[in-house]
Image 1 (spheres, helix red, strand yellow):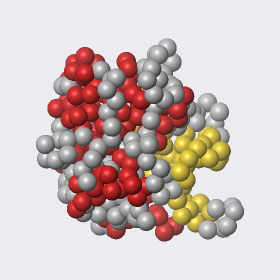
Image 2 (tube, one colour):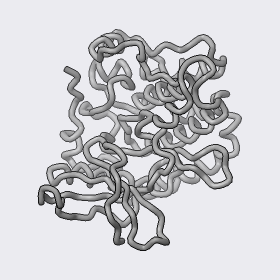
Image 3 (cartoon, rainbow, N blue to C red):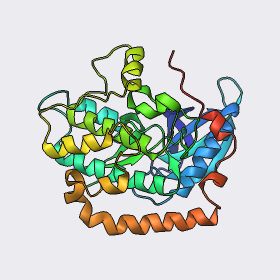
Image 4 (cartoon, one colour):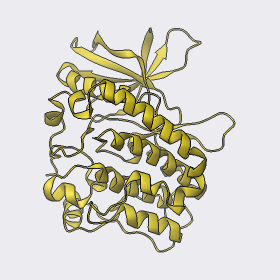
Length: 312
């Protein structure tokens, strides 16, 4: 597929993302994630994981058939590209910013419910195959406007830090990390659920988790002590209960994606999609079995590429 590189769109976990414009004007715009040669293995791992979830609702799609190689015209060094869906609506972080902060602000509640449902379905698929995304946050969730629809579609992106459940090596974003990760580096699907709670809270309030703490060292200490982001009293009862289940201090007691899909906060929107979700998960599991399991599918070096986050 022939294309030309357009404007920069953002920074991924280990690469830069640009607009990719097809030379055929009839074809839709794409995004391209580009990495230097020393990050090729990480991008290959991300591509392989995304291929596992091809067709799963709520997860960004790869395009173009795999990695391509080119020489960077600026420095003459080799780089590798991965074509992805282009989200014309930007990221969820940008969408949240447009709605403001505090009481009466935030994304409309009906929209938050729909987005949360989509994210839970995506996490259910990811966790069912033994993976953990490790970096769920608004900037890694893309927004896709739909013609004739008031509510855009959202999709999870940037699987650069993804690893298998049970791994002790990870990277992520401090303000979205749960206590167990900072305490003993325990990486399970519960890590993504905590981060989802942070994301839902941010959608409802317009404020980042730990927004009142400017110093990351203070954030680190609060999380390490087992504290959680503050849940405002003005939120609805359903919303507060949903967040409480996401923020359970003991990760073993934290609700998983499947149980949260039945929570009243999203259940009214989930009934019509439950059957479809089960069908998609079954299709993904069949594909997983053909590839020999999640652990065997990840290159050995992924754990080293996803080493512990350095805070200070």
